Image (spheres, rainbow, N blue to C red):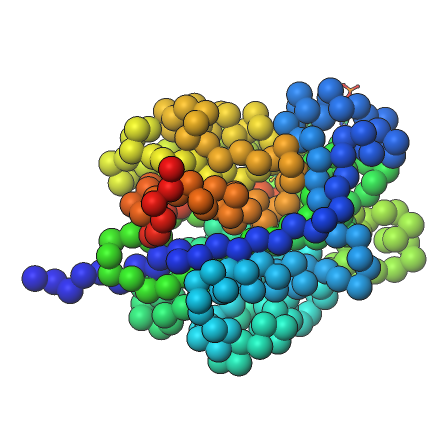
Length: 335
Ligand code: COA
């Protein structure tokens, strides 16, 4: 008989959310918007904001990673690799992964950042899982987190109501018990570059007085275009990963969707043939934390999950980037 296949199990989850809240009422004082519009168009009621100017994404990522490792009972020195998905790194370079490695004291680990906007955590999960399947590593930390408030224009009502700050982390460990990351699809389409981007601050438009005056260091979004692409992208990817693994709606315990907009999540769930009780939704409390949304969902629902639960993770983001992953949960006895 062939040896059992090595897969990457999620063996623990950690999360960090900054304590300060930005409510819809707070936003009403900043821009011409209102609670009813925000709730009905996005499903968001409040977001968390990292107010402390001495802290940034690496702080949130490290806090999430610490909680994750403590739950797993794994020492930082036993981590082989750290992947940090973020579009709000502390610096253009070095990577946030380097800062997290140092803060954690993970002496043996290497790592790097993954820039894939709202799909970043999903891409990281695939990358980390492949490192483990290939036999290269036994323990990989995959972290998704963003301090979106640092690149949001709080005079632009079309973006400032959507985004929030937060980070989550999972530990991937080698297993042969048939659980873990079992399949994934991922895509990019660079024709979407200017539908959702931060135009300046890179090598094309480095920071100058002109770029700052033109407010080019903030997120800009063509909401309608992103919405249309996200609805089909997330739903198509989720359906593809289900179909090619013979999964149908009743086989799925939870859809773990990127939290961009409640209407995009609903469309994905309908396409998968699943009901509202099979969907993780916490957008009301955190808004869109970009690379943070998926691990923050896993953290919120962790106590409810059972060994063997089939989860489909799906995301869509700037780039465009999108994808879906079939994850068979590896621990817990849930409710
Ligand atoms: N408060 C009040 N009115 C607002 C507003 C706000 N915060 N933001 C926009 N509006 C106005 C618009 O100016 C527009 O007014 P007009 O008709 O007078 O021009 C009107 O509301 C409708 O705007 P529209 O952009 O058509 O709204 P929408 O229903 O498409 O919702 C988004 C806007 C941004 C919520 C929606 O397009 C969306 O969710 N897009 C995808 C976002 C996303 O997923 N981003 C992350 C990708 S991972």
